[in-house]
Image 1 (tube, one colour):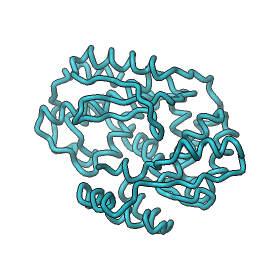
Image 2 (cartoon, rainbow, N blue to C red):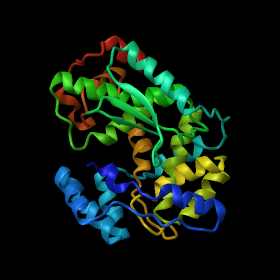
Image 3 (cartoon, one colour):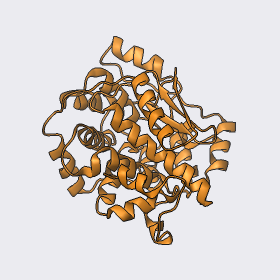
Length: 310
């Protein structure tokens, strides 16, 4: 029972079929929001309560307020400008498969002696999702990367796993606000520390701009924006519908803006030194707790962390 269960629609496959049969159709999303589930979400994560209530009420202004707070996302002018510059040139597609990603990811885990298994599953609504209690990572068989390489995605997801196993080893409890830092760190490594434009930084910048747009526009407008910037229809669907998670009627403006969190925190973390970034791997901690951990420690050797950082 996590926030992901609350924000992930339960009818994505059906609504995708309707949309691709009628490109003017605006998906109508349904969620697991029965009374028992809602109480479960609030009990597991009390800080999520206000956002849950706003989603259930479909109060878009409140959804925006609480999602910005919960996911710690902002759309600063300098970041919007930086993102716009990164999408000026459309990169070539890579289009790796779920099976290829699973093989690369498993080899990275094995090389670090991390006892996790990678599984390709018949599920919609995500591309790659770690399940730390079960020590496994699920990859949707409907994975569609387009601009993202399997190598880069595997490195991205490896950050999540390393921080989990190190946190267990170091006895560091998962901090409630760890996620923005973790996703920013994962993207920063995937984008090779954002030193120069790349296919993956193009993708992250595009999603940042789409997240900003989705708060003011319909799903169809977001979809058309993504297509206009070079996304194929499958990628535009996968990336576009995520922007509308948390809302029901996607013809209306509204969004959790969660996708904007990745690029925003990637930009914040790009200002840190390599040693500071390495210390973020001690566990699932937020950036503002970094001073509590003056040295790196973990089951993964520090030299391997520094290799990951390039």
